[in-house]
Every structure is written in structure tokens, then in C-alpha cells.
Amino acid sequence: MVSFEEAIETVGKVVETVGIAAIVVGIALALARFAVTHRDDDGYTRCRRSIGRSILLGLELLVAGDIIRTVAVSPNFRSVGVLALIVLIRTFLSFTLEVEINGRWPWQRRTSDEQA
Image (spheres, rainbow, N blue to C red):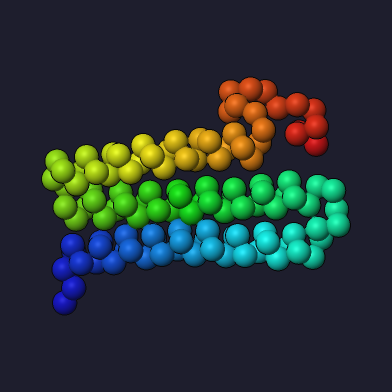
């Protein structure tokens, strides 16, 4: 019989694996789409946005996997501290990617072009 800790560890690893797959598949699809439609003027921008969104999704899943594995399996002060550092770094990366994708700060209002 599988223990609770082993089951949670497995769930955390599965979520992290899905995060990695989201990044890899998203990048592959964005590059394939760009290769087919690169003649379009906005193709490069769309490709960058697709890649950025894939990375953001993957980062969210990786953070979720880290939280599951750290908090549920071994919640000691050191592991929670390492988790906090990882979440801080990934949050910074997510924030900068979001700015790069949208071309504006999150607190700025959308322009009429972005709403369409």
C-alpha cells in the first residue's frame, strides 16, 4: 500500500511534469505556427506571445507542484524557506513575462487596440 507521503510526492511530480510538458509543447506549437505563417507582419509578435504564455502556464504548474511536494510532504523550516525563494523567483519571472507579452504594466489600463 502506498503511504500518504508517497502519494503526495507522486502527485507533485506529476504536476511538475505537466508544467514542463506545457512549456515544451507550447514552444513547439508556437514555433511551428511561426514557421508556417511567418510571412505575416505580426507573426513574430504572436510567436513571442505564445511562447511567453506557455512559459507562464508552465511556471504556474511548476510552482503548484513545488507547493504540493514541500508543504504536504516535508514542511520543515528549511524546505519552506527554499520554496519561498523559488516562488519569489518564479513570481518575478512571471511578472516580467507578463509585461513582455502585453507590452504594458499590469496596473495600466488596456488601450482600445488591446480590447478588440
